[in-house]
Image (cartoon, rainbow, N blue to C red; front, side, top):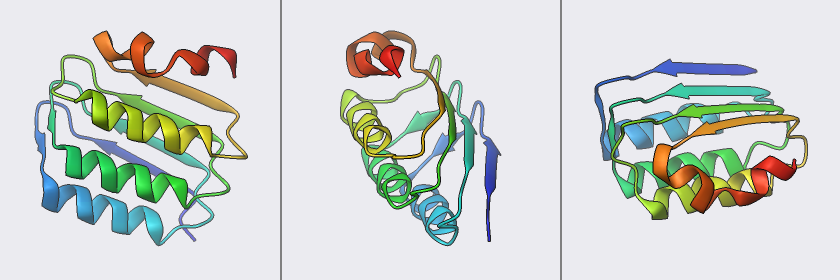
Length: 113
C-alpha cells in the first residue's frame, strides 16, 4: 500500500486532468502516511484543488502533510478545501503549508496544531 507520496511540480501547471490523476493515485493508498507536493510557481485549478482535498479527506492515516505553493496561482477556494481536509485528518501530526498570501487567511488554525 502507498504510504508516502511526493511530487515536485515547480514551475508547471497542475490542470484538471493532472489533478484527477493525482487524486486517483492518493485514493489508491488508504494507508498514506506522508504527502508532499512542491508546486511553487504553479497554476492550480480549483477542480485540481478539490480533487486533492477529496483524496486527502479519505486518508485516515495521514501524519505528515507538506504543500508548498509559494508564488503560485492558488485560489482561496482551493486553500479552503485543502484546509478543511486537513482539519478532518485524525492522525495528522505535522503540517507545513506555504501559500504565501493565503497562508494566514486560510489556515489560521494550523498554528494551533
